[in-house]
Length: 192
Image (tube, rainbow, N blue to C red; front, side, top):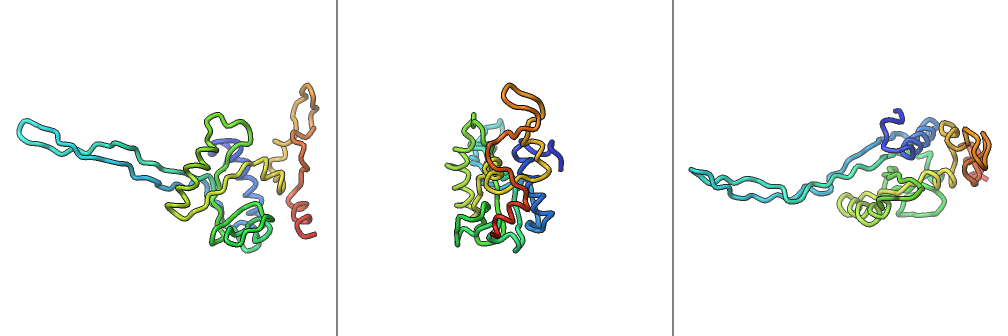
C-alpha cells in the first residue's frame, strides 16, 4: 500500500509500523479501513395524493451512520505481553489492547491541534457506540505517543529527522526530544 491510500500521514506511519511488526512475526494480518453500520437511518412513509390513488412513499428523516476504523490487527501469540494486553487482564506494560481475543481495533488521530474536535467526538460518541453495539473496543492511537513508548520503524525514520536547515535546526537533527529506538532496541529493553 502507498501513502495515497490513507487519509493522513499519521495513518500511513502507523501502517508502516504495523508492517514492520508483521514482518517480524508479531502480527498475522492487518486489515485497513473496516466499516461498521452503527445506525440504519430513520425512514417514514407518507401518503402522496395522486389523481387516481394515494401512493405511500418512503422518506428518509435521519441519515444512516457508518463508522470506518483505521485498522483491525490480528496479533500472533508472539505479541502477547510484549505488544498486546487483554483488557480483561489489564497490565500497563503493553501499548496495544485486545478484548477477549488477539485482535486490536485502532483509530489513528494526529498529535497536533485537533481543529474539528474529532478526538473528543471519537471518545464521547463513536468509541462507546462501537462497544455498545458490537462489543468492540476501538483504541485511539496517536503516532508520536506510540513511537515514544515503543519504537520507530526503519521505514519512517526519514520523517523523524530534519531534511533541510531551519532557524534552530540543521539537516539530520532529531525533530522530537524523546529517545528514538529501533524494534530490536525496544525488544532488548523489554526482556531485561
